[in-house]
Image (cartoon, rainbow over all chains, first blue to last red; front, side, top):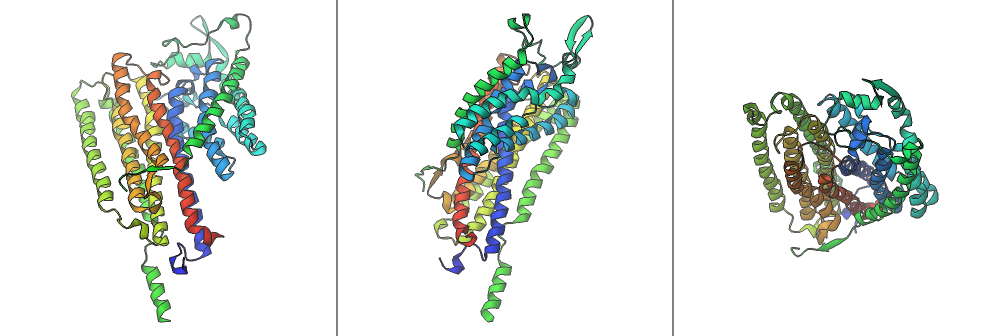
Amino acid sequence: MSASQSAVRSRAEAVQVSRTFDWMILFTLFVTVLGGYHIHYMLTGGDWDFWTDWKDRRLWVTVAPIVSITFPAAVQACLWWRYKLPVGATVSVVALMLGEWINRYMNFWGWTYFPVNFVFPSNLIPGAIVLDVVLMLGNSMTLTAVVGGLAYGLLFYPGNWPVIAPLHVPVEYNGMMMTLADLQGYHYVRTGTPEYIRMVEKGTLRTFGKDVAPVSAFFSGFVSIIIYFLWHFFGRWFAKTDFIADDAS
Amino acid sequence: MAATTESVKADAAEAPLLNRRNLTLGILLYLVFYSFIRWYEGVYGWSAGLDSFAPEFETYWMNMLYIEIVCEVVLFAGINGYLWKTRDRKVMSITPREELRRHFTHWIWLVCYGWAIYWGASYFTEQDGTWHQTIVRDTDFTPSHIIEFYLSYPIYIITGTASFMYAKTRLPTYHEGLHLMYMVVVVGPFMILPNVGLNEWGHTFWFMEELFVAPLHYGFVFFGWAALGILGVVNTEVMAITKLLKKDLA
């Protein structure tokens, strides 16, 4: 290739072109993952994430990590194994949470007038950081799945505790004992009100003890390990660069 | 000296590698348009969108539906038809610099596609959850659906197919075959639109209320996963651009 056929005129221009592409790629990756991850999460764990009266000690703690470890695992499979960027999980979760916060403020509050302290999203960032750190230090998909996946499930409740604790204090209302979060739901009736759709927290073991959240977190962590493996391979598949035969060309 | 002057003149006359004006306009176009849409639904959702049998519902919402469907069909046919009609029939013989310029233009399309995916799959989809949990539907064509399903989804479909069409007709990288993940990332989110049929069928026969995590919605989830096909497109682009720049970056 002669100098006149080069794509760029100088090394400085090559560097500038490369950086410009970096920004365009990062923006596109960020918003596309945001869109895909958000529609996945809102339709598999969304109601547990939308309303504080769904944020119980059993199903919320179980469901949210299991359905949210998916895209982080897939994006890690591309960004780490191809580019050695240890940020796949964190970037995915930050993208998701940005989309959620914009929506909860602009629409849940701005269009249908639910107060933000009733509809704020769950915090997934601590588990995502641990996933990235385990992958970066261990450079092993198996280690990340087992240690990171378990930690992702276990950290979910502690990561949300400072936010949800004030809403789990007991209150008495019309002779009924409930949490402050339940009371919020009582005043803001929706078609997804837990009592209406019969998805309130229940369980026989609660007759004998109160340690629901840790049991749920461990179970969630175990399932998260399996889901991580599965979605890691999904991520590898989606990162393929294969072409298929085009009869038209 | 004369040759140098000619060269400088040629550089000055040459189009820039990245057309920043088009990139900015592309992003602003979606932002301004969707800001207007958000204002419209905020005002007319409550004042004219609660009862589908009311005359004002026909005026403000059904007419909007008819207009947007016509515009979308025209836009889809127009943009893709133009890109196909003006395709480069000698795409394999373009200069490396022209190829680089086209990669930048292709990325303007991809930036717009990602941006459109955000608005469709994230912004207008989750807001559907809060609207239908607040206002119990009496029609399949609710204010939220008229914007989410029949406006924001077609717009990202049009942007995605145009992006694919641009790459296929103007870039040597995509000339020899069909890029599997590019098709996944365009066709998958496209399939969310036909899945609306299942959604409406289910809400009509099973339950009018909204419950976002209901299995009825899992079809949307499955097709939403296809957005991850962007990883394969990014990998292919990185390889192609690296090939164009490698000598000069080394």
